[in-house]
Image (cartoon, rainbow, N blue to C red):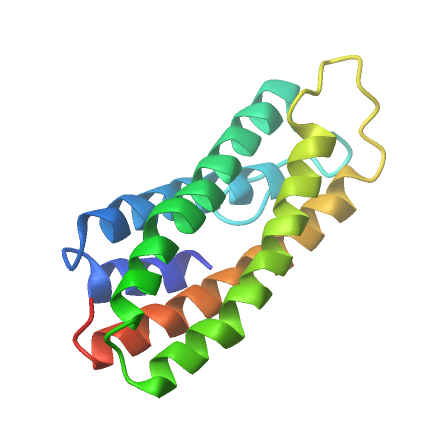
Length: 156
């Protein structure tokens, strides 16, 4: 996922201010995800859960990323796609519902973990984090398809 984001930043960075900010948020989110999950290059004791403050901070980044996608980048894509070929509009119509499905997973994760305290029982956290990671990977694939199509039609 980090490699995908780095490639996206190299490819579309500088094309649009909202996309730049969004890709930076995406990178920050991914780094924190890798830390929470204990994925390389970050480590986590397999028998211990992350600190509740780290989980809450991650949830804030998650909501920032999801929100900027929906309310800044996707709005821009929709506006630009009005002048786009039919294939671009069709792709947007295909992937927006799929992206919305991943948004629901992100919102559910946030609802479950944003307000955790040290006393909170985090049963199922690792499984929920893994499911979220899969959803984020799909989401980024869909988002990159949209950006690629916009770039091909010089709409980005």
